Amino acid sequence: MSPDPERPTGRPDHLVPYDEVRRVLVIRALPGLGDMLCAGPALRALRRAFPQADMALLGLPGAADVLARSGHPVDRVLPFQGWPGIPEGRGDHGPGPAGSGEPSAEWPSVDLGLAYAGLVALQREQFDLVLQLHGDGSVTNQLALAIGGRYTAGFHAPSLPPPAAGHFFPYPDDLHEIHRQTRLLEQLGLPLDGDHLELTVSSDDRRQARALVGPDRWSSYVCLHPGASRPSRRWPPERFAAVGDAVARRGIAVVLTGSAAEADVTARVAAAMDEPSLDLAGRLTLGPLAALLQQARLAVTNDTGPSHLSVAVHVPSVVVYGGPDPSDPRRWAPLDADRHRAVVPAGPRWPEAVEVLDQVDGLLAGAGRGGDCGHGRGTGGIETGRTV
Image (tube, rainbow, N blue to C red; front, side, top):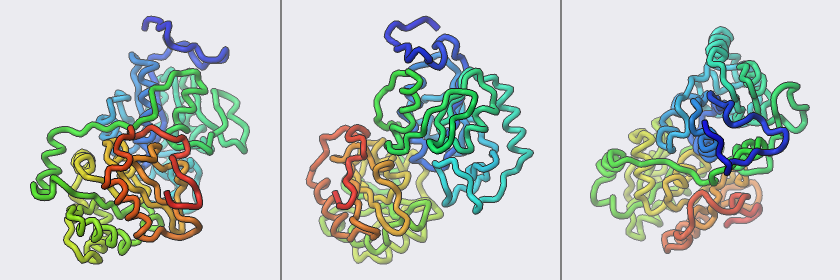
C-alpha cells in the first residue's frame, strides 16, 4: 500500500501505521437493522482509511445483507458464536439490552463450547487491527482482547478504568449512535467520510415491491410501520389507525409494514381503521421493504429499524417516541430534522394522533423535502419536552 500524503497521521500515539494493516476485524454483533445501518458511516470511513485491507465484521445473521447493500464496506461477515455476558449470541434476538454490551440476569448463559470454538477460529485469522464497536465494552472488550490482534481499540465504560492492553477511550454516551461509532475513528486519527446512511435498492427490489402494492397504489401511498422489537415502544395501534384514516381521506393509499412476528400488530391497525389499507406484514424482505419505503410519499414509524431505513433510502418520515419505556431520541432520531420529524411528547406519555398527523401534513405539503438525509444537527434535531 503506497503512502497517501493526504491521510492524517493522527496524534503522536496514533494507533498503527497505515501500511501495517492488512487484516481488520470490527466487532458489532447487535441484532437491530438500525444498529447496523448506524454503523455504516464508521465502516465506510474505515474502508476509506484501509482500502486494500481484508476487512471482516463479527456480526449476527442479517448483517451481511445490510452491508452488501451499503456500499460493501466490509469483505466478510463472520458469525458471532457467543460470549459470556453478551445476550445477542443466543440467537434469540427479542427484547433485551441490545447496544449496551451489558449482561442481564434475564438472559441464559451462552454455549461455552461454541463460544470457545468461535474464539479460536478468530485467533487463527491473525488480525492486525480489532475494533470494538459493540457498545461501552463492559463485556465486549474482553472478547476483543482475547482475539489477539496486533492492535486492539474500542471504548470503555467511563465508570471503569480502561483495559491494561490496547487503545481504549471513554464511551461517548452523550452522542448520537452514528457519531458514537465515528468518534472512535476520530480518536484513532482516521479521517471520516460523512455521517449519511446508505442502502442500495435494485430494480428487482422495486419490481417485487410494486407487484405487492399494485399499480393503482404505487403512484401515491404512505407506509405505516406500527411494530417494534419491544412491545413497550409501540405507539398504540388505534393511534396509527387514526393517522391512517386521515391519510386515506386525503386520497393517499395506506400500506402497513412489519415482520411476520408483527402481523398481529398490523392486523390490529387495519381492524381499527375505517378506511381501507394494504397489510404487507411478513411479506417483505429487506430489499423490497427498502424499495417500498423509497417509493412512498412518507413513512410513519416507531423508533425501530425502518425509521433508519427511511433515512437511508431518502424518504421523509415521522418517528414516534414516548410511552412507558421510551428510547432516547437524542441517540436514535434521524439527524436531518427537516425531512425526518421526531415526535417527542412532554412527560411519560404517548403522543396524541393529532400531534403525529401535524408532522405528516407538513411533510406531505412538501416541507423539508430539500434536506439531505442523514445530515443535520448532532442531537438528532429534537428538543426534549415538546413535539417537533
